[in-house]
Length: 235
Image 1 (cartoon, one colour):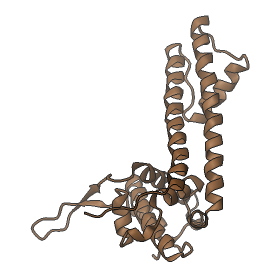
Image 2 (cartoon, helix red, strand yellow):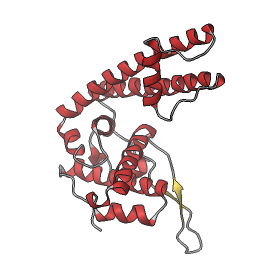
Image 3 (cartoon, rainbow, N blue to C red):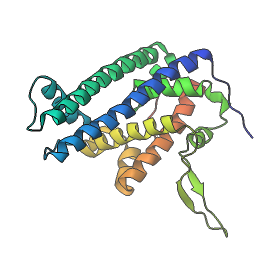
Image 4 (cartoon, one colour):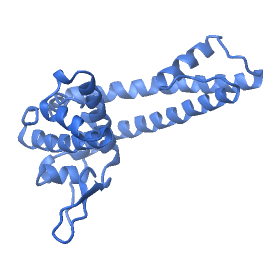
């Protein structure tokens, strides 16, 4: 059994911002779905995306209300007000996290990797601490649940889905970041490295983004333990 280091008070303090922000994001998603469902009951359909719901909430609070009974419009107004408030709080938490990332040398180094922003970099530094507690980059990837299950038997090597064990929050951030990177690669393949371009072509999109997150975790380990700058993966 391998034990990980106990987090410092500073790490816990930074992670408290991340947990609070993550809760607010989940509450915003629930509230946005509630607004959509209430509008749908009266035949009003909103475009996909939180931006569309936010834009509607602002219009509603400005007096541009849909053709609905007064009671329903009143309830909708309360939800729109709550959504705008959640957006402001999330923006505030994001600014606090970005400030921490800019003040931390390791976080600044990680942000030079494509697909890694201030929130992901800050969460990784605050959660992992000293990356040397992991023997290899694969150990870190396994701790994040990004390595495939080994189903080999009878001399035949078979790898299954990723384990999804370990820190769910960082795993989600890495996959989302690599998804954004993959989308950019599809739109502008000339701007990405050859390894990323090839894996997106050779594998299904979701499988490719997970593989990219796995490789990113290994690169993060090398950058944190050896204090190296980001280098594009070899072909």
